[in-house]
Image (cartoon, rainbow, N blue to C red; front, side, top):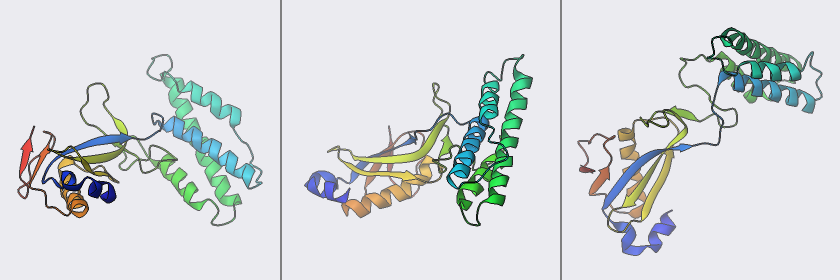
Length: 218
């Protein structure tokens, strides 16, 4: 990024910038406990086959049918059956995880099995939930959009020079921090890459002005 800014010459050294933060969505399916439990079952069966371990049952057909039973869970006539299917999927997933822990050599897939146990232990109101097995760092963001209440990914900030429209910073955050709390890190990164202190920053109304910064809101 610094090399591309330096190529812009004076255009990349503007002291007046615009900052915007936005969710960067990851390529994951809409997360539900049933989907995650089904994936854990499939992964456990695959790991057992790869390690040449014989499971008591693979639950391949059973888990597939149970996942179908969870569909349309809000319908009054399907609510009871869907709830039972969700519980059964979690039970089967936990059973396979424990069986692998017993039969696998110590240390093999330990990190993955701990991840599976954490997923199965989380409840609807749990904090720091895991929404994807292949992207466990994903978190849930609510930006108040009418058409999309929740978004799953990570928060990203982009900084653009106001007069020359050169992108000088594009960075992501590992935790779901408040937009205003991202400003110090973003401005520090701007100074590091441009070797210029930011004089003014324009942000959206979701960010409250800091006492240490001169900020214009648009």
